[in-house]
Length: 122
Image (spheres, rainbow, N blue to C red):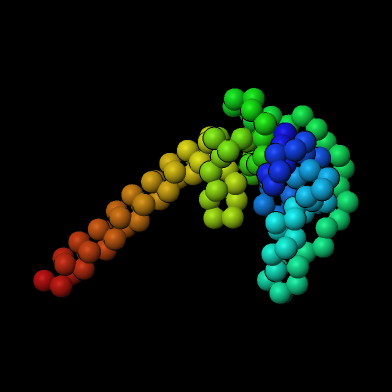
């Protein structure tokens, strides 16, 4: 696994952005996230984390820099950022399918309401 800041050997996974960091660029939270103000306007303090090595992408075995909500570790090629959550390619495809089905359901509901409104107005 590689640090997303310097591409050096990573030792942990940021708890805010789910990207890997090295011992210089993070400690529970990477330096990028630690520098960003939280919702209260206070920057996040870094805290110690266990050391881990050798993380690779679940799909292509390249160095992983993201962790999906499902637990898959991902390289940049097999990762999508959806809202604030990093998703692997498989979760992204499932999410797209769910959105498509929900869109059809909503359209059918609105069409039904429209038809009923026209029928009751005559």
